[in-house]
Length: 277
Image: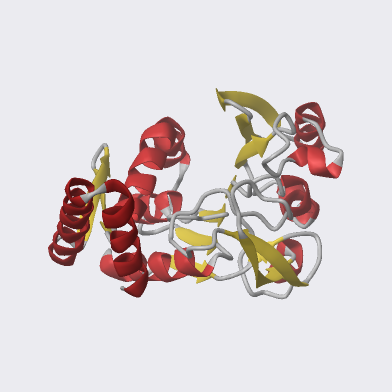
């Protein structure tokens, strides 16, 4: 509140009373609106999911992501089967986890998300939708066990999409220490089941995740993987290039696990791969 008052006084002194009044009305509108409208709904086909609406920024982020990734999300919903296990690695604002769990109540979803504001929102939305088939794990997956620095913005907010366990993340202002696990070790220890489907979106740390998933990816029961590959074309964002890896290397790696590789979509420096057996 104090920061908002200081910001308002700054606008008043630098831009005048009209700008001050406009900013005040915008602030009051957002505060009152989101105190009344605490949720919103997104729909794909006959699957409807309710999401928590903590503020306008989070809602806009999630709706933009839903709009840009709706086709691949719909593709996954067509592929998921009864009794499947889906790993949602880099769950973020939980679009894939919630829609998959809602579409297939007899499937199991394991969501991996290290960023604390996203984890809190994900747990809230799992409860909101009364989903009993989602295991929310507040940890990053990598090639080693321990802790790792996760890049984050100065203002903690759910839905932040450029955070990565790879340092130097885009518009990040600071880092937070998060637990880091190896998926193959978790499976071997019986903590989580072997996946049939995997979705990976980890902002450039894809090679680390795959290194920790070698046994699972080699398993014949793992039949489908969606991986958003962040190429090394832009210096200010983390990418697979930080690990000396190229898009061609990624495709070859999956082929060695027995997958056929298809490019579903390309968005700037991001390429969505679909791998299937």
